Length: 371
Figure 1: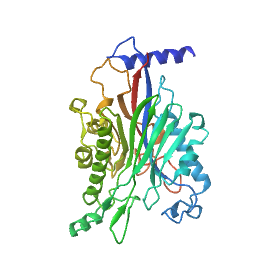
Figure 2: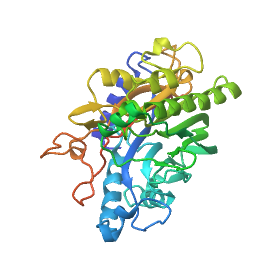
Figure 3: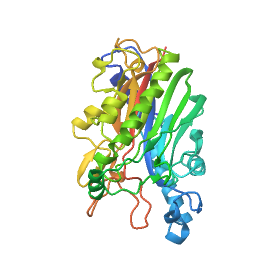
Figure 4: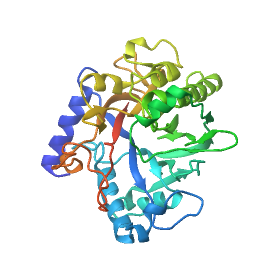
């Protein structure tokens, strides 16, 4: 190891151990979530609304490859530091068209040597976007995985119609079954596996959008929050000491009813009293003015990663198993629009040119003491 890298390594290790014990050393893993913003291939699938992402509409193979270039650049750097050189060992993703695009991403030259594998299910979302799960096989081995459907139904009143006209613009419009009024949206993906031998459970989410207005669409996200809570309670019922991470683009902030009441997420670690309790570090980040996306010059954090009580150490010297350390939003300058109407926003796809995403990725660090 070169001298300057060795010195940097020691500095970061010491910073991690400050407040724990100066002689201890820790291994650090990054767990991340990223909304890939319309990662579509160029093939027209008759079963999905993907026509705008076809060569006839300007979404060429060149553009598709450029999109993969951009995303792989983010993922290889996300959550790294002088001491933590590795890319995220676990990545939750959304706004992906199918398994193929995730496979193409893992095979990108930038990411190939990380050995990422894919967990994916096709969801009933009629626009053709799903959630997905990437993991480094060297560090994480899935035991089981399942997609849990979210059943929500349109219930429009006169006041709802007014709200719909005044609602937010979004390209994430759910399809409604004319007969049943079911709104087809993304499933919630549950993956259970071993992180360096330790069992953890991860739920990947992309909750219903605010299409039609925040107020009108809120019940759909509240239902998503309740489903998320139900999944976690089922896990805890089987194993009271289970470790759970829930992550995703929730289309709501940490303060919204879907998160605060649906999931029951807590602002402070001290509020965690039982294994089923969930800590949301992104609530304080939002209070401090940070953002993972912007709409009409207003920033918010819709992209969140939360951890269960078993991830939060009550003894600052007890890191024998993986514990939550800290969280972050990855918003490096190359991810930010430099000019124009959307200056300061995430550098998204626009005017036929592939960008990165209209969301910044988020991440947390898990740490474990090295004996």
